[in-house]
Image 1 (tube, rainbow, N blue to C red):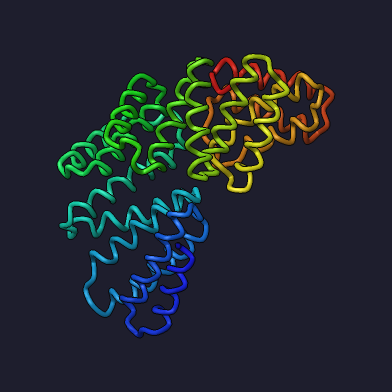
Image 2: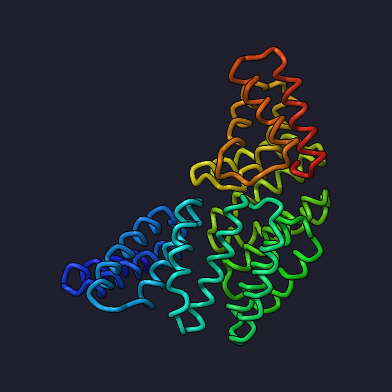
Length: 342
């Protein structure tokens, strides 16, 4: 009943003169939008809430309220991949952090810092700082004795290990998160399931990737989580491409694109590389160049330099209608395979 709740908050908003209450109501609207994964709208409303609470803060000291509004705004900006804005918000939060005494609020700040590290590095070969921070966050979470908070911390640490390509540690942390979650909080369960799948894919383990992808598909469909359903289709496209079932691989890749392109999902590469392989085999080089161009998007996950160079060359060949487009495309697919991105 999110829409009904937001309508009620809107009525309340227009019937109060208190800036602080107006800000709180906007925060509730933003949280409702986040819960529905409407991240662009959530970010807009979070920014509005923050500005209102800033005005209220000028009238009375409300540092905790301001800090929580900053936290929620930072969270929303992560999901719309606005790295610059996220860094600005984190810097401002650090100024207020010494005055925050609520342990749960402090924990949410540490979570936002983790998100900022991920986005700043584009989920690629994260620095040691990410693990140090993740371990610290975990110790604070364990002290809460709250299953959801602890599972979030283990899941976050697993995510950091994944993008450092430390796959055993990645799956170990995700498994502990599963143990705490026990199928509560399906969004977090699905996050851990999807990236456990990716970890097996990055090790070229086709059977385990397929096994986990089918689990993800069932949960994503049951919870109507389109974002993760798109990534699951990507992984199934990869499984079929590796088994040379190219008809199914292309079908899954295109289904994934339909979901992932409109939201500019940073993991878009998961479906593009299998699709490039299919298009290469069918001599559809021009269409492949169009999709290869998407790999240059600045919010997409980072790649090794060797792969970046070949993708840039593909883009150049495509734009210039180079006669060597087929050869360049083949080089990209081969390099993606060598670096475990396909």
